[in-house]
Length: 149
Image (cartoon, rainbow, N blue to C red):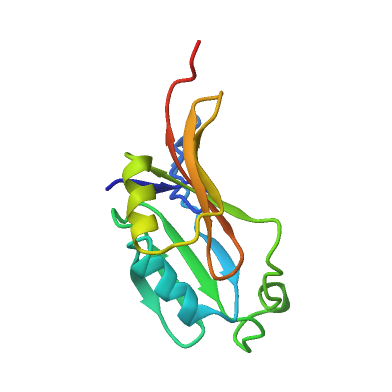
């Protein structure tokens, strides 16, 4: 299943000017005490894989390996202050684009995952539903369709 994690998506941008071309890759990170719960949720519920982990850092990838998200323990001595404060549980969401949102919805329901927003169609073309990860992050799971004219 093709998943595209839009907030933590792999953003590859080609900027071309007269002399250079560069690529950019984005990996969003969440600072959390809940590394174990987070790993379990993303691997067992969303079928993510583990790219790298140690006692204070977890890097995960979507099933197709096109996008990554990382999780870091707060207050780790190897990190500077800007990377030490734990996420407060508000103000962040993730969007995961899937080929068949209805299939994903049924799969997660069958696993007993709590659905925060039931599946629905939006006037702008999205068909989606939402769940919440162990860190309180809302995850919008969507299939984009062309809006009705």
